[in-house]
Length: 201
Image (cartoon, rainbow, N blue to C red; front, top):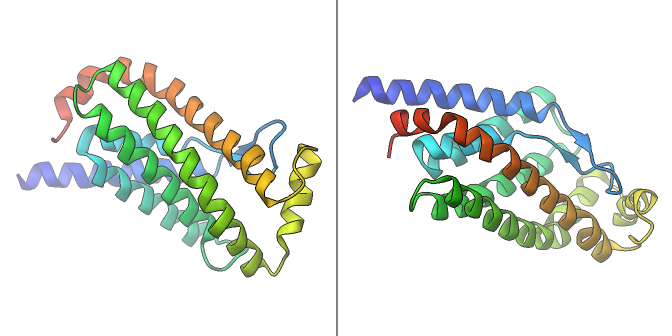
């Protein structure tokens, strides 16, 4: 039992570290605001969820963001971006797990990722409008209009905060979810036997 717990802790630490490293390799998407950058750091947390359950996946999300905040810092002093990343990943993990755990098949993985993407997109669109963008503006000492102006340069249909979250944040999260799904499907198929052997249910 102790040996199993130790292996779990070591593997979770490894996944958290990989997640942090993936956070540092981020890039913007075409036609979307440059400050919305895509990374693949949710993949280790999803793997942790498959192996050890949703709590472990959420813990991995938390640790990778804590490492990122400690090592990389943030211009807002308060870790607004890290909190947003944590919440986004946690929503995806919870919804994904609710569907995936029923049969643990490629089909349930795909459906779980799709529904996770939908709910993640809806909730984070709302959160960005009411909490995240106002928080960035507050801690950076800038107006929300500054973010809107940056987004407008990438997409001329964006002209206020509402259109920013609808035409910027929402599409970003949809694309992010779709890309993660496309990566997770072959990854799960290839490692399915490993997941079945080492999963702690």
